[in-house]
Image (cartoon, rainbow over all chains, first blue to last red; front, side, top):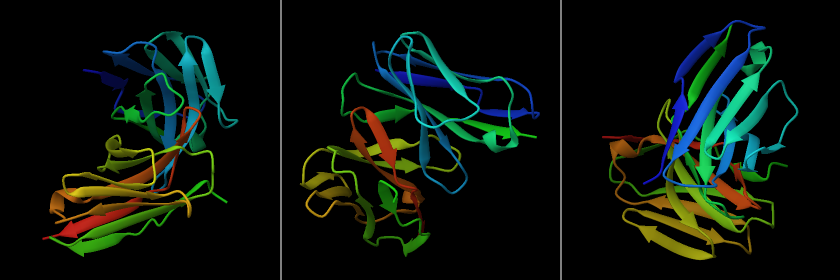
Length: 113
Length: 109
């Protein structure tokens, strides 16, 4: 069966510090990978998605970047965090298909102070 | 206009009630639709996945899609306190999922 791991679960970082959130998927190959952000009381905003190694599509201009160094690894980064980067970050995977459901990790709650 | 609109609620019902959750969408390219359940501080969990107009049933849950009116619904029968969560609808097009903002549901004993 497929599993998705996302860490850390919670993170408190000062403004201006760097960020690296990691997500890995097991039990499948060549998945679609996604990073979403969820602000309090709001829906999920798609930040990045990837259909293959080194292929990253950005949905919104922002202070964040994503990389996919391996088939089942997806990393969300920032060089300098802003207060507005606080939120609940969710990684998800989907089957290699144009129309597929997504399966989510347990999320990282990031607080920038 | 948001691609997926969902009434955020909150919605409070007694145990055993039938719950109706609804979304509208504007993107005609959406082919597949999903409902997710999200407990507090957890990642969303896939409940239902549908790709055509009509009804799909899974236990106490029924998903309904009406592509002509761009309307999707989730019905929960015999609701339980454990159903208390945020419910998110989503449409997918070309590999991208677009979510509504979620409806907060509370089922009280």
